[in-house]
Picture 1 (tube, rainbow over the protein chains, first blue to last red):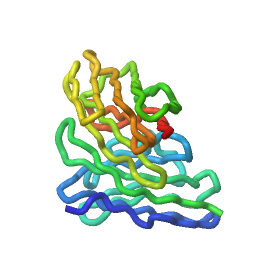
Picture 2 (tube, each protein chain N blue to C red; picture 1 turned 60 degrees about the vertical axis):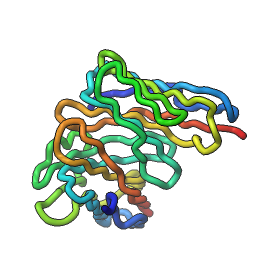
Picture 3 (cartoon, each protein chain N blue to C red; picture 1 turned 180 degrees about the horizontal axis):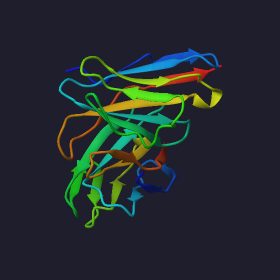
Length: 114
Length: 110
Protein backbone atom coordinates (compact mmCIF):
# COMPACT_ATOMS: atom_id res chain seq x y z
CA UNK A 1 0.00 0.00 0.00
CA UNK A 2 1.74 3.11 -1.22
CA UNK A 3 1.98 6.05 1.14
CA UNK A 4 0.89 9.60 0.50
CA UNK A 5 2.56 10.80 -2.68
CA UNK A 6 3.35 14.43 -3.31
CA UNK A 7 4.83 15.83 -6.46
CA UNK A 8 6.90 17.51 -7.41
CA UNK A 9 9.34 17.26 -4.48
CA UNK A 10 10.97 20.52 -5.51
CA UNK A 11 9.42 23.32 -7.54
CA UNK A 12 11.04 26.55 -8.65
CA UNK A 13 8.85 29.34 -9.95
CA UNK A 14 9.53 32.93 -10.98
CA UNK A 15 7.50 35.67 -9.34
CA UNK A 16 4.12 35.96 -11.04
CA UNK A 17 3.97 32.35 -12.26
CA UNK A 18 1.56 29.69 -11.06
CA UNK A 19 2.48 26.77 -8.81
CA UNK A 20 0.47 23.54 -8.80
CA UNK A 21 1.20 21.07 -6.03
CA UNK A 22 -0.24 17.56 -6.19
CA UNK A 23 -1.11 15.14 -3.43
CA UNK A 24 -2.27 11.56 -4.00
CA UNK A 25 -3.72 10.20 -0.75
CA UNK A 26 -3.22 6.69 0.51
CA UNK A 27 -5.58 4.12 -0.98
CA UNK A 28 -8.94 4.24 0.74
CA UNK A 29 -8.35 7.69 2.27
CA UNK A 30 -11.01 10.27 1.48
CA UNK A 31 -9.74 13.18 3.63
CA UNK A 32 -6.82 15.44 2.72
CA UNK A 33 -5.16 18.19 4.75
CA UNK A 34 -2.67 20.76 3.43
CA UNK A 35 -0.08 22.51 5.61
CA UNK A 36 2.67 25.04 5.06
CA UNK A 37 5.99 24.97 6.90
CA UNK A 38 8.70 27.61 7.04
CA UNK A 39 12.25 26.62 8.11
CA UNK A 40 12.55 25.95 11.85
CA UNK A 41 8.79 26.33 12.34
CA UNK A 42 5.80 24.06 12.91
CA UNK A 43 3.06 23.12 10.47
CA UNK A 44 0.49 25.81 9.73
CA UNK A 45 -2.93 24.53 8.71
CA UNK A 46 -4.19 25.70 5.33
CA UNK A 47 -7.16 23.63 4.16
CA UNK A 48 -9.06 20.44 4.91
CA UNK A 49 -10.89 18.67 2.09
CA UNK A 50 -12.99 15.60 1.55
CA UNK A 51 -13.73 14.21 -1.89
CA UNK A 52 -15.30 17.03 -3.94
CA UNK A 53 -15.80 19.21 -0.83
CA UNK A 54 -13.81 21.87 0.97
CA UNK A 55 -14.54 21.35 4.67
CA UNK A 56 -12.37 24.08 6.21
CA UNK A 57 -10.25 26.61 4.34
CA UNK A 58 -9.81 29.03 7.22
CA UNK A 59 -6.01 28.78 7.06
CA UNK A 60 -5.70 29.57 3.39
CA UNK A 61 -5.16 33.13 2.11
CA UNK A 62 -8.29 34.42 0.38
CA UNK A 63 -6.40 35.55 -2.69
CA UNK A 64 -4.19 33.59 -5.06
CA UNK A 65 -4.58 30.26 -3.22
CA UNK A 66 -7.09 27.55 -4.05
CA UNK A 67 -7.43 23.83 -3.38
CA UNK A 68 -9.48 21.00 -4.77
CA UNK A 69 -9.92 17.28 -4.24
CA UNK A 70 -11.87 15.90 -7.19
CA UNK A 71 -13.76 12.62 -7.27
CA UNK A 72 -10.98 11.14 -9.39
CA UNK A 73 -7.33 12.12 -9.23
CA UNK A 74 -5.08 13.85 -6.74
CA UNK A 75 -5.75 16.84 -4.55
CA UNK A 76 -4.28 20.03 -5.99
CA UNK A 77 -3.06 23.11 -4.14
CA UNK A 78 -2.80 25.97 -6.59
CA UNK A 79 -0.95 29.22 -5.99
CA UNK A 80 -1.41 31.89 -8.61
CA UNK A 81 0.97 34.81 -9.21
CA UNK A 82 3.50 33.52 -6.72
CA UNK A 83 5.55 35.93 -4.62
CA UNK A 84 8.81 35.38 -2.73
CA UNK A 85 6.87 34.99 0.53
CA UNK A 86 5.20 31.86 -0.84
CA UNK A 87 8.53 30.02 -0.66
CA UNK A 88 8.05 27.22 1.87
CA UNK A 89 7.56 23.49 2.23
CA UNK A 90 3.99 22.40 1.60
CA UNK A 91 2.85 19.12 3.13
CA UNK A 92 -0.30 17.15 2.64
CA UNK A 93 -1.70 14.42 4.85
CA UNK A 94 -4.50 11.95 4.23
CA UNK A 95 -6.75 9.96 6.51
CA UNK A 96 -9.69 7.62 6.11
CA UNK A 97 -13.22 8.68 7.00
CA UNK A 98 -14.34 8.31 10.60
CA UNK A 99 -13.63 9.84 13.97
CA UNK A 100 -10.12 9.78 15.44
CA UNK A 101 -8.59 8.27 12.36
CA UNK A 102 -4.88 8.76 11.87
CA UNK A 103 -3.35 11.09 9.32
CA UNK A 104 -0.26 10.18 7.32
CA UNK A 105 2.00 12.64 5.56
CA UNK A 106 3.69 12.88 2.22
CA UNK A 107 7.30 13.97 1.73
CA UNK A 108 6.30 17.51 0.92
CA UNK A 109 6.87 19.91 -1.96
CA UNK A 110 9.53 22.54 -1.50
CA UNK A 111 8.52 25.64 -3.40
CA UNK A 112 11.13 28.26 -4.17
CA UNK A 113 10.08 31.52 -5.76
CA UNK A 114 12.90 33.39 -7.48
CA UNK B 1 -7.81 27.71 14.36
CA UNK B 2 -7.08 25.77 17.56
CA UNK B 3 -3.92 26.86 19.35
CA UNK B 4 -1.59 24.19 20.70
CA UNK B 5 1.47 25.40 22.54
CA UNK B 6 4.45 23.12 22.94
CA UNK B 7 7.20 23.54 25.49
CA UNK B 8 10.04 23.74 25.47
CA UNK B 9 10.54 25.09 21.96
CA UNK B 10 14.17 23.90 21.92
CA UNK B 11 15.80 21.21 24.02
CA UNK B 12 19.41 20.08 23.96
CA UNK B 13 20.38 17.19 26.22
CA UNK B 14 23.13 14.61 26.70
CA UNK B 15 22.67 11.07 25.56
CA UNK B 16 21.21 8.96 28.36
CA UNK B 17 19.20 11.76 29.96
CA UNK B 18 15.42 11.81 30.32
CA UNK B 19 13.17 14.54 28.98
CA UNK B 20 9.53 15.59 28.79
CA UNK B 21 7.82 17.64 26.11
CA UNK B 22 4.48 19.29 26.81
CA UNK B 23 1.57 20.12 24.51
CA UNK B 24 -1.11 22.42 25.94
CA UNK B 25 -4.31 23.94 24.67
CA UNK B 26 -7.45 25.58 25.97
CA UNK B 27 -9.45 23.52 23.47
CA UNK B 28 -10.74 19.99 23.88
CA UNK B 29 -9.68 17.47 21.24
CA UNK B 30 -11.28 14.17 20.28
CA UNK B 31 -7.80 12.70 19.87
CA UNK B 32 -4.21 13.79 19.92
CA UNK B 33 -1.39 12.60 17.72
CA UNK B 34 2.38 12.92 18.12
CA UNK B 35 4.70 13.11 15.12
CA UNK B 36 8.45 13.28 14.64
CA UNK B 37 9.94 15.10 11.68
CA UNK B 38 13.48 14.99 10.35
CA UNK B 39 14.99 17.66 8.08
CA UNK B 40 13.71 17.48 4.51
CA UNK B 41 11.09 14.84 5.34
CA UNK B 42 7.41 14.73 6.16
CA UNK B 43 6.21 14.17 9.74
CA UNK B 44 6.00 10.53 10.79
CA UNK B 45 3.21 9.44 13.10
CA UNK B 46 4.40 8.07 16.45
CA UNK B 47 1.18 7.54 18.38
CA UNK B 48 -2.50 8.48 18.72
CA UNK B 49 -4.18 8.90 22.10
CA UNK B 50 -7.94 9.05 22.29
CA UNK B 51 -9.20 8.63 25.85
CA UNK B 52 -8.70 11.23 28.58
CA UNK B 53 -6.00 10.00 30.98
CA UNK B 54 -4.72 7.47 28.47
CA UNK B 55 -1.05 6.47 28.66
CA UNK B 56 0.72 4.74 25.77
CA UNK B 57 4.26 3.39 25.75
CA UNK B 58 6.43 2.90 22.71
CA UNK B 59 9.75 1.44 23.88
CA UNK B 60 11.47 4.40 25.58
CA UNK B 61 8.68 6.86 24.72
CA UNK B 62 5.68 7.40 26.99
CA UNK B 63 2.71 9.46 25.83
CA UNK B 64 -0.05 10.75 28.06
CA UNK B 65 -3.35 12.43 27.20
CA UNK B 66 -4.71 14.77 29.85
CA UNK B 67 -7.91 13.86 31.69
CA UNK B 68 -9.74 16.80 30.11
CA UNK B 69 -8.33 15.98 26.62
CA UNK B 70 -6.77 19.46 26.35
CA UNK B 71 -3.12 18.58 26.89
CA UNK B 72 -0.58 15.86 26.38
CA UNK B 73 3.01 15.01 27.23
CA UNK B 74 5.77 12.96 25.67
CA UNK B 75 8.44 11.53 27.96
CA UNK B 76 11.62 9.99 26.56
CA UNK B 77 13.76 7.81 28.81
CA UNK B 78 17.50 7.46 28.24
CA UNK B 79 17.58 9.60 25.11
CA UNK B 80 19.67 8.45 22.17
CA UNK B 81 21.18 10.47 19.32
CA UNK B 82 18.64 8.86 17.00
CA UNK B 83 15.87 10.66 18.94
CA UNK B 84 17.05 14.00 17.54
CA UNK B 85 14.32 15.70 15.53
CA UNK B 86 11.31 17.99 15.58
CA UNK B 87 8.47 16.64 17.73
CA UNK B 88 4.98 17.84 16.87
CA UNK B 89 1.70 17.29 18.65
CA UNK B 90 -1.54 17.56 16.67
CA UNK B 91 -5.08 17.73 17.97
CA UNK B 92 -8.07 16.40 16.09
CA UNK B 93 -11.24 18.41 16.57
CA UNK B 94 -14.80 17.13 16.68
CA UNK B 95 -15.12 18.35 13.09
CA UNK B 96 -12.24 16.04 12.17
CA UNK B 97 -9.81 18.85 11.40
CA UNK B 98 -6.18 18.45 12.53
CA UNK B 99 -4.19 21.33 14.04
CA UNK B 100 -0.53 21.21 14.92
CA UNK B 101 1.42 22.47 17.88
CA UNK B 102 4.32 24.89 17.67
CA UNK B 103 6.90 22.08 17.76
CA UNK B 104 9.81 21.07 20.00
CA UNK B 105 13.22 20.72 18.42
CA UNK B 106 15.21 18.08 20.31
CA UNK B 107 18.96 17.65 19.96
CA UNK B 108 20.60 14.72 21.72
CA UNK B 109 24.34 15.18 22.12
CA UNK B 110 26.55 12.08 22.17
